[in-house]
Image 1: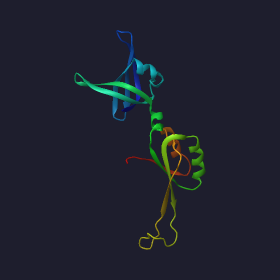
Image 2: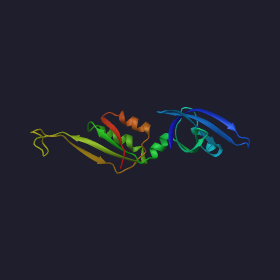
Image 3: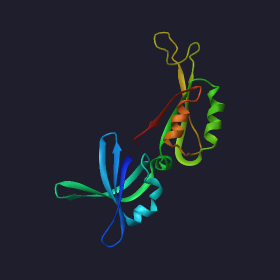
Image 4: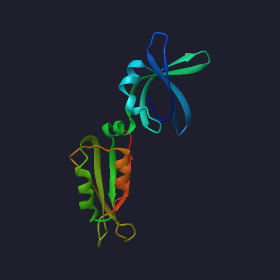
Length: 173
């Protein structure tokens, strides 16, 4: 799988009359080109506009001295991210953020992403875990039961909400 932003599209017609295209794409590592044949081209035409971020499933093979990438399927990158089973930790800076976050999340239910909220509980008095007489702050993590559609745009919006200290994706097992 490859992700990238469409930078160029050159459509052609084969000798047999089938449409195909060469797509130029770029990612953080640079630019590359892929070939899209007729069936995939027609099913994903709306995603092949310049500037569109996409996720590609490709078949790679060596052609002379260079790899040739043939697209098997194309998906909108935002939708693919929303459909992923990612887990995000949202750290709340204050309790007022809870209502704002609740309102933001309600329109993004029914996805596959997991969300956990982390609250800091200020240290008070003598609590177990003191280090040299200083009370340590505690934190509570709460996993939300619902699943959410977590697109990159929505995650960026969450990060800008008042009272949200951070939003981070948890990777790994």
